[in-house]
Length: 154
Picture 1 (cartoon, helix red, strand yellow):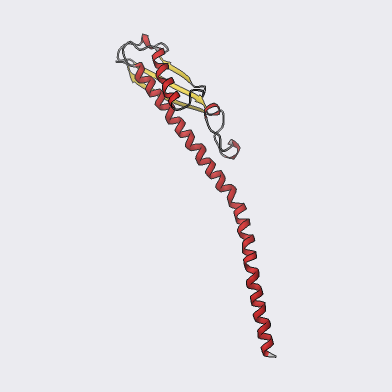
Picture 2 (cartoon, rainbow, N blue to C red):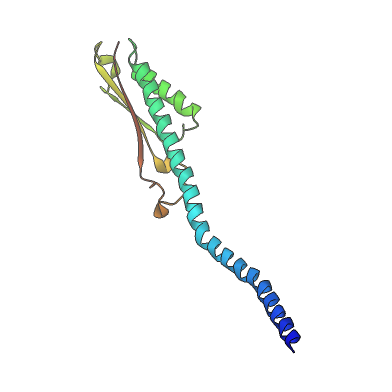
């Protein structure tokens, strides 16, 4: 009689060992469904903000190139626009709808030693890659990305 109880207990233990992995498998699926959206939002947010800072650096570089072109004696607004356009084309941002503003408005009137400011700006909605909607923490489409550079005229 004792021997039969040992067999039944052994079968009961074996039965619970077989059921445990099934329960654990269900828990891991549940954990994945809870964690996966957060990881995806984090990943897309990294891509979104990474591209934003790349775009910000590119626009800042274009503004610096425009300011360098503006400080040379005999420079015109066309020279500045051409330098900025070549930088934006090299970065594949020629269709981003960027705007160029110079201070003073006409660079040819600036005296030697005067400060010149070149500002390049565009809208994130026309230039940016939107991998994460603004509702989920992404950058709003109406965000303005601006780069400015100030130098003294030679």
